[in-house]
Length: 178
Image (cartoon, rainbow, N blue to C red; front, side):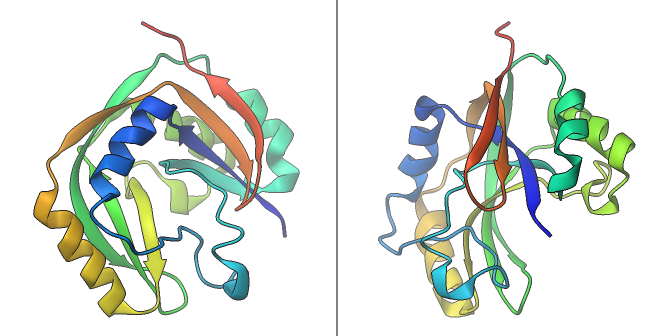
């Protein structure tokens, strides 16, 4: 079944901060999980760096769009690089964040309507996927390279975006400037 995903959308200035922290590795990274289209993962990796708020079946698009609030911009502090197990015998390298009330409150809106336990804001691990690979040594190599120069940094979330997963943007939603 077709899926959609609601994500934080980073403006170019904020993406430059992410890319600055990734420039020490020359390994081509891919954010698409295994099990979708394994032969074409790099080609279909169209989602920008982001934090996922919610994902659901495409049939729920209208209901999800009606729930998107007119929220204020907010900041997140990226404070670590981690590795976790992924789907289909893979490993996920990601940026983690300090706990963030605004992000949890946004996610809670969709969780309360759709009740998909995976997106329960009380247990969900907010993370920015950097690379997914079935080869742990590649993940470990990238981790070692990135973590030697890593320093925590803040980014501003100015927009949300709804994407066909893992493909193209459906719609972008600007957040209110304070």
